[in-house]
Length: 400
Image 1 (spheres, one colour):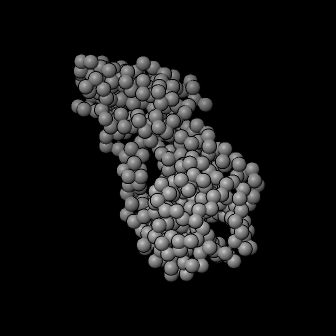
Image 2 (cartoon, helix red, strand yellow):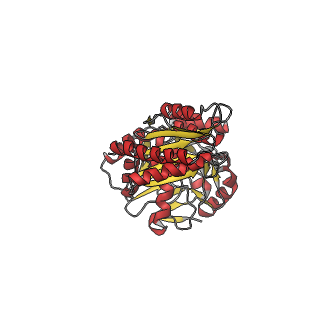
Image 3 (cartoon, helix red, strand yellow):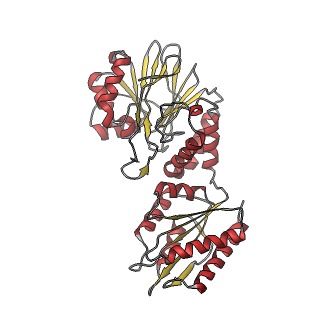
């Protein structure tokens, strides 16, 4: 199946309706995803990217129905990750001498994955590839989100093939952004940014300003996953600039795990204290042992402040919360306030450990935290309410 994007520009990818986990078990894809490959026909023909390895043979067989593979003049590999390049070995088995255009780091990544010495053509920003009436202009995008990443701009049609930037994990028969449910689209887009691109936000801003600074027209943005942005494509560019700028909404998120419900009770009373002080703020609570970790991370991304709670166990904290803290550290969130809380029985190190992890992850820890011995009674629950109220007052004073 192909879908026309512009005259002689086609989507020839694969919709993966069944995908529920991505990057191993690291990313949840409840709405499935797509692996977007694009075919451009002119005096010369270019294929941009392939699909995930399990669909390699299906992809090549479908491509044969659209074009004699020998008519493909150029193969372009924007990114060596398997969801982009997985069908490349099967494709190149049929056309082994065709040139493969990629960055210098792309050569390293592709040979590292597949151990094949294809006819690599190394490109850098500003290099042009003539297709006849139109040209592809290459744009390196290192660390968005791999060292080998690049994009292309198609002259004439004014299309940006943006690789992983501006993508989302959505499986839909409607390829274009104006044909899908907007709330779902932007829910997946911000989740994608929060969980994958957050640590590279300064590079996102720099690269967008570089591309926008060229002052070229833009009719569509074609990412590697999800929908093509054809209706006001700059709207997602504007969103990325917002998300890259230490993004915050008026939200406070409380994350916890609990053994015998004591820490849960503290979390709920802290939430009530926050709302008592600031009725208009959005408060989200999540038991991280029972929640989708990528949804949790998205809520952290959206928040101006977070609280994390765990009982003390074996002089440490519960593993589910430790995992979230590790993810938060890797994503390098900025300009967010934080605090810790939890129950304990005898040693009570948990709150201190959480606070130390939050500081190491770059959060501004604004209080020593709240500790409750054994099961919280009315007195401890009142303290938790007051703690939430005070926390809201402190982070409120720092609200921008």
